[in-house]
Every structure is written in C-alpha cells, then in structure tokens.
Length: 479
Ligand SMILES: Cc1cc2nc3c(=O)[nH]c(=O)nc-3n(C[C@H](O)[C@H](O)[C@H](O)COP(=O)(O)OP(=O)(O)OC[C@H]3O[C@@H](n4cnc5c(N)ncnc54)[C@H](O)[C@@H]3O)c2cc1C
Image (cartoon, rainbow, N blue to C red):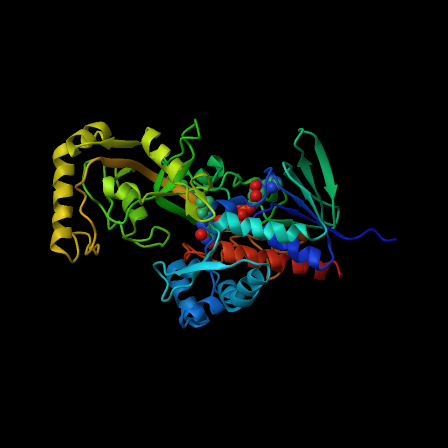
C-alpha cells in the first residue's frame, strides 16, 4: 500500500487549526507541531474579532454592507502598501469562507462592533471571545484524524535536492531532536512581536531611544521567520508593525520586556512626563493617522505617558491579555490585583499625592485635570477635538495613574506567497511543498493589510489563508 501523502502544519493558532481541519477533511495525512503545551496561539489571547462582510449576523442587524464599501475602508486605512487583490478576495469570500464555515463548526457571534475606519459595523465578536473560538476550532479538529504534537518546537525547515520542502527539524518536550519527513509543510507560526531582535530590526529608528514593550502573544517568537530566512524565502513590508500606545509592563515578566494593553475607562486622559495632555485619547491606535495616539506618544520625550482616571473609572479598566480575560469577559479579581500591585501603577487619595508618586509636576497635572473637567462640564469638544459630552469628570478619589509605553502588538508584513499561499523564494520562484498562512505571511501574500489594518483583519484572514493553504496542499499533492 502506498504511504499516504503527509502535510506537517507548524503552529496550532488561527491559521494552523483552520489548515488542519481543511487538510484532514481533504484526506491529507495531517500532523500538527505546536511549541506550546496547548493550542490557540495569539488567537486564544485575543478578543477573537473578525472583520466579515455580508454575514447573516450583519443582515439580521439590518446592516447594509458591501465589498466595495469595505475595500474603500481597507485601502483608506492600509494605504498604498495594502495588497488590494488579496484584500478584495478576502472581503468577497469572508461571508462564506469565514462566517458560514465558523457557523457550521458551531461558533456563534455575540456582537458587531464598528471601530474607527469602518463605514458600518463589521467586526464580529465571538460569543466566548478568542479563547472560546480557539477552543471550538480545536474541538472540531479533534474529531478528525489529525496527529497532534504539543510542546514540540520546529527549529529547522529542510528542502531536498530539488529545493522542495522535505520536512522539519523539531525539538520535543524532553529536549530531544527529531526530523519529521513530509510531502508538504504549512508554516502557521504567527508573528514576531515577542522577539526583541527581530522587532528592533523591523522597527529600525523607531526602536532607538525608547522602551517599546513586546506585545505579541507569548508564542510569537519569530522562529518561523528565522527558519524561512535560512532557506532564502522572500519577505516584504516587515516594517509595518501595529504599535499600541497603551502598553504597560507585564508584572509576570521579571525582565520588564513584555507588556499588556490596558483599556482604560472612557473618560481617562493621557498626560506626558510634563503633566500635559498631548492627544485625542478617543482615536483608535490601530489606525495609521498622523494624529493617532501612537504617533503622538512616539513624539513625546521621553516616550512614555500616564493614563489618569479616578475611582469611578476603576471598575471599567480591562486588560487585553489571556490572564485577565476569559471567554470574552474580564477577570475582575486579576485586574484589581494588577492595578494594586504593578510598580507602574500608582493610586493616591489626592492629585497632589498622585503627582508625587508618579513624579509628574503637580501644577501641570492639576491644571490639565481642571481644564479637562471644565470641558466636560461645558459639553461639546475639548482642546484636542475629543467629544467629551456625557463623560464623567475625573474628580473622585482615589486617583490612578497607569504608566504607558508603546507596545508592539501585530506584524502586518511577512513572507511572500503566491495566490495559493505557496512560499516564494528570493529569486521569485515558488518553493514547492512549502506554504505559509497567517501572521507569518502578513495573513496571506505577504502584506494584505498594508501600513495598518481595520480591526478584525488578522484573525479572519488568518483562518481564510489557513484554509487556502490546505486546499492548495491537497491539490498540489493530487489528492
Ligand atoms: C492580545 C491580542 C489581541 C488580538 N485581538 C485581535 C482581534 O480581536 N482581531 C484580530 O483580527 N486580530 C487580533 N489579534 C491578532 C491575531 O490574534 C493574530 O494575528 C492571529 O491569531 C494570527 O494567527 P496565526 O495562526 O498566524 O498565529 P497564532 O494564532 O499566534 O498561532 C501561531 C502558533 O504557532 C506556534 N508556534 C510558533 N512558532 C512555532 C514553532 N517554531 N514550532 C511550533 N509551533 C510554533 C505558536 O505557539 C502559536 O500557537 C490579537 C493579538 C493579540 C496578541
């Protein structure tokens, strides 16, 4: 009997699990190699939001959307570096390839959000958050004949004498090395925003003279990228990295290198080291704009700020990290512990005391707060064009100050692939048998989003690309 043709999928996150389901359904012998002891990757740490156009959920909410409208928004936000062909393909097919597919697998949406840059609400938030979505995908995948190898890290990619993918070198949980031979490899190893060396190279000048926190998921260590560079794969747009302004150091990381994103209360303000506001805090940081909060923070000297709020805002703080969010809901106890114990978060019964603890000039911050509260009481806009109508003033002690640093969250550029997610080499030709999907491939093709992305344009496209890569494997192996 002939040996079955085997695909090795590296990474069990959004793209990897989607690829595994698709490959196994196409009857390709499928092995998944995952470095972590559990599946999910960044998907499980995320809110799980997917940008989808024309879903039943949108229609049931009376939302009229179209691919052309979404394309306009996408290109507006992604700029000329967005891959318009891949973006249009994704948007045109997202209702079937992502929404209908996830629905068939048992995923349900909780709500639709309209983040800045979108003309209509189209970010679909899953009922049980990103961890719930990952769990559901894995549950479905487990009903299929897939071989899972957890706590196993791919270190090397091997090509045969014809430059075809031949297998991967893996280090197992006991430290032993083994070679896993196969007919095709799908790399779905995620981004590198948890790898200081790669990040500094990609950020260039932006990384100098500032503390930029590592904000990718724990597994986003760039090993896939390193392995790809040893076999002369082509990369593109690596400089496009989503920098978030609301990073604060993760108390669980003794090196102080990793950070988490703090979502403050709606009325919080950010002040710089001089105690002055410097931006409209209401602008979404994921969007590339000259007046974005990230751009404003990167222009401060030093590049740090304090998020200021009071006792009323305390209960509204959330932290976008797996430890502080379960099934899409905040874990209040953990958040409160973090607010009380982080050395980067100060609490005080008066603004005077807060200023002393955070080492911010008292007169400046007192003036800043007075002006802001005044604008709220008057209604309308404030000095930075922020709509403050209906916001609470910051006046009820205790007052809190959370120190913020820029945080690198997501990679938007990656390894170049063709329309079937086959990896392209530096010489412009396909590396046969090697496929890449998800964040390692700028979702698909290398730069689907461009300089920045609408919310939800990482997970949806990663699932999409994982499916496309697996179908291409089945087709290329002539199954
Ligand atoms: C906190 C947070 C919130 C986010 N929220 C959203 C959101 O709401 N919407 C959205 O669209 N995007 C969001 N993103 C981004 C999104 O989660 C990722 O872009 C997406 O999950 C990428 O999918 P992926 O399959 O490429 O990578 P991942 O989901 O990260 O999976 C990669 C997997 O590969 C494994 N791996 C890596 N290297 C190796 C190796 N050498 N050997 C074996 N295994 C390896 C990793 O351990 C990981 O499990 C968020 C990201 C973060 C960090």
